[in-house]
Structures are given as C-alpha cells and as structure tokens.
Image (cartoon, rainbow, N blue to C red):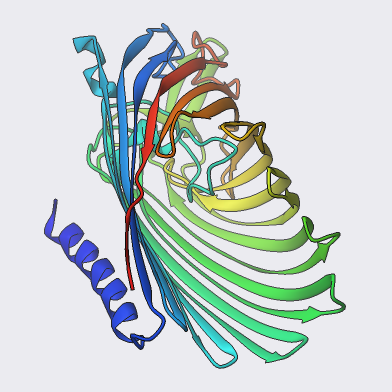
Length: 438
C-alpha cells in the first residue's frame, strides 16, 4: 500500500469517526455484521480472448463487514471487503484476484437541510472491475476489456447537500472526484482523473408527481504513461426530470439532458501502414503501436443527448427494475465514453427459504468527441438462487454469460469480434448475527 493510499484510507476512517463523534449519545445504535461467501468457480473463456478460448476453474472467497451507525440526526455506513479467487492451473495465475474495497456513506440532518458524504477505495484486479451485472450499481467507469494481468487503484470522494425550502421545493447540489491508476504501464490503459458537479431544483406538483431542472459540469484528464498519449475533455449541459409514483410499490423516473463535450487529445504520430485493404494513415504511439486512424491531434466539440427512463417495483417478496439510458462516463481507454444501456433485473422470494434473481445488462460504448471506429457492445446475462439452510447459512448458485462485440476495423483483422464467456459459481454464504451496541 502506497503512502498516498494509506493517507486516503486514513482520511476515510477519520471522516467516519468525526461523523459519529459529532452526534449526541442519546438514541444511538452501532451494529456490526460479518458476511462470508465461498465456492467453486468455472469459466469457459475468462480472458474473453478474441483468439483462443482457455477455460479455468478454481476457488472463490468474498468476505465483508457491514458497520452501521444510526443516531437521531446522523447515519454512517462503513463497509470493508476483501475478495480472493484462486485457480487450479499454474497457467491461470494471472487470473487470480486479490481485491480490497472500503466504502463509506454518511448523512447528517440539520433542520430542513441534509448533508451527505461518500468515499470509496478499491485495489482490484482489472478483470474484476469490468464484469458488471444487471444487479450491480453503476461501476463508475466504462470498461476497456483488454485483458492483461494488471490491477486498478481507485479513490473517490463526494459530497451532497439538499435544502428543503418549503413543502414543495427542494434545492440540491453535489460534487465528486475520482482518481484511477493502473499499475502496469504497457497495457493500453489510461490513468485518469474525473471530477463532476451538479446543481438542481425539484418542485413537487402533487403527492405523486415531482419535476425539476439541473445543470452539470465535468472534467476528465487521462494519460497513458508508457505510450505518451493524453486526452482531456470538459463536458457541460443541462437537464429536466420528472418522478412519478404510480403506487406505494411502483415508481417511474424520466430524465433528459443535453451535453457539450470539448476534447483536446494527442494520440501519437501519423504513419502510413499497409493493411489488407491497402495503405492507411494511423496514429502510432511511443510504443510503436497503431492505435487509431489519423488525425492524431484532435481538438473537437460535440453535442450529445443524454437521458434515462426507469421503472422500479418493490414489494415484500419482489423487486423488479427496468431502465434504458444514455450517459457520458469516464473510460480506461483514455476517453469519456457515450454509453447506451439497457438494464433489466428481478429478485423474487419464491418460498420462505428460497430466493432467485435474474438480469440482463446491455451496453454500447462510443468514444465521445473522437473520430475513432472503436465502438463496442457488451451483453451480460445472469441467473442465481439462494436457499437458506439455517438462519445464518445459505447454499447459492450463480451463472453469468458475458459477450463483447467489437467494431470491424483495420485493427481487428484475424480476430474474433464476438468473444464470450460462461461462468458458474456454486458455494455457501454465511451472514452472522453480528454485534449491536447502544
């Protein structure tokens, strides 16, 4: 762990302690709950190779602590987590994961105002960071999915503020900053810094309907230290939104906005290369690798529409989520990516001891503001079950299907443009009774 990392983790823990220390001791509760998952895993093409599929099998373990503090005006959640995956074949050593996470979320209320603080730290395998499912929250960065034995160090912090001006009007502001670094240099990945801010006003039209407007600003700076490539961009714009509560269990959201992205990029030196289609002018980086078609110095401005439409139904035994969206998000390929997404997920309690879940996640990525034929599509489908053996122990099974579709271009000749992977994980979970302090 580097000094910078240790300082960040220390600051995260200090923020949690200060949030708790600021609270009165009356009516406080602290609960600590341990969880452990362990099982056998099999994958048909874990590297999502575009040339030769090579299956792998091994062991997986995932442990975490949920530390929750609740007071009269303050709540704090701290969640340290460690995940490990070991494979039986020595040739699969680069697939092994040693992932560390530490997440913090805190809220504090003063009168009609509410303040929030979030912080996240992760030191994880690259492959782990890119295998999202429909049940996962937004992973905060579009996937490159160029497999190499590498790890990703990510640190982020955010703050939010909400002020209820009166029973029908609320003003909100938020800001967050993220720093992502990759340890290996010659991987094609870019380190990046990303910062974003949002200001919005929401008006409640009735008991079921609210609507509002907002403005957004973000800055993205990336660098490939080995290839000497850089890409900086600034995105800004506005949006409108509406929330509709159809019933106590069904809620809909609609969001639409316009964004302008200004890009300043240097992809390398122009060089003519022979391809199966004839001579073509490429951008060649400092590692003598062709990375894109010319031009290589890019200063551009593009306008893009963004939006989201979602439905969520929640009841005692069921949760359904369906959403379709377009967003602009930071990416490890050195650009902000235009991300189109369809997400469907369901969790259903069948019987007292049995629960199932299923989901489909579709994503299409395009590089915002760059004339690079590098679009790609991702499809993930997953199904799982959990059967409670006792109050604390459960048997579980999970299946996940991943598929990528790459764009046809001069850089993809003789490669499979639709690699896919089938993964199965079967094992036991333990959720302890935990400890409660008042």
